[in-house]
Length: 88
Image 1 (cartoon, rainbow, N blue to C red):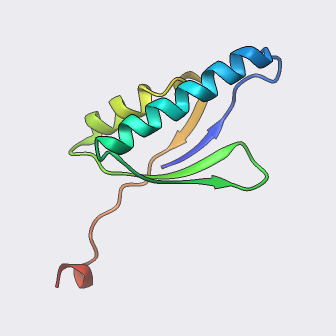
Image 2 (image 1 turned 45 degrees about the vertical axis):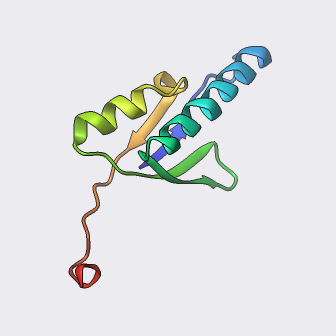
Image 3 (image 1 turned 30 degrees about the vertical axis):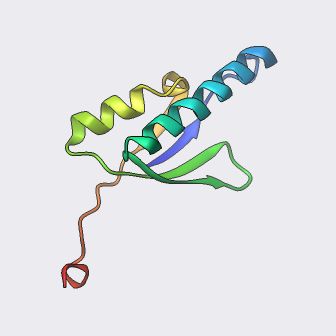
């Protein structure tokens, strides 16, 4: 999953801080639940690349929509499957 944060530039600093803190808490919950596997920042952009594991598209959608920044995220999901060589 690739996401770009489109939070408006005029968002008050205290609201930004509140949303960022909420994102950290929710990400840790998703990590503990085994849904969020890895998360990387994209240097120079307000963007991330995340590796999520969900049983179906609805579970992934619910996880992503549970993030406090969800209303401002431009999300691109790229489904992955196990490569045949990895099954051996």
